[in-house]
Length: 151
Image 1: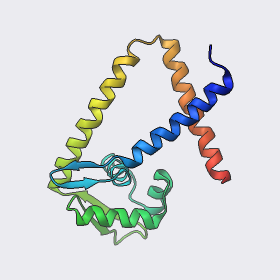
Image 2: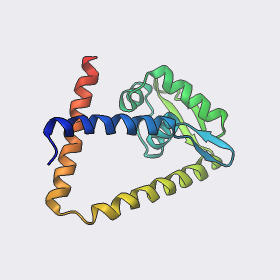
Image 3: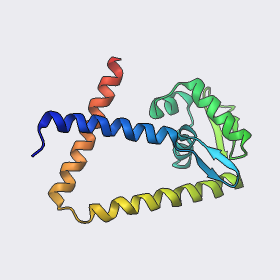
Image 4: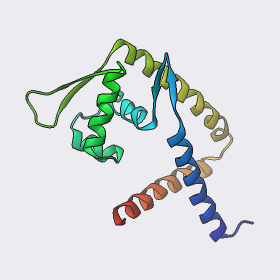
């Protein structure tokens, strides 16, 4: 039986390791290298989210300047086209190039493959175990968001 304190430390250690692995992950597709911040932003755009820089920054957890720089890098890589929205301040019109559409299909496919690996394990769990994991993940994010605000 694992002690509560040891489990809490194990959780924090695993969060740190996942964060480290995520930051190191470079995705390559047809000679295009994408970094985690770029991939996160591309998914945000792909999912049809708001293109207000403030809202994007808040959702992703980085500054408006970082969002703007990341969008510029993605445009230079030929993945997106960004244009200011003439009707609304801080709004952009962002669309995928053909290369960007192909890239997103590939990224989604790779992410789906990873999801299937987790799905194989999840299928072995009872409904109660699934609910426990889901609740724990929600609480974990809530605690981390509160701590982040306190820093």
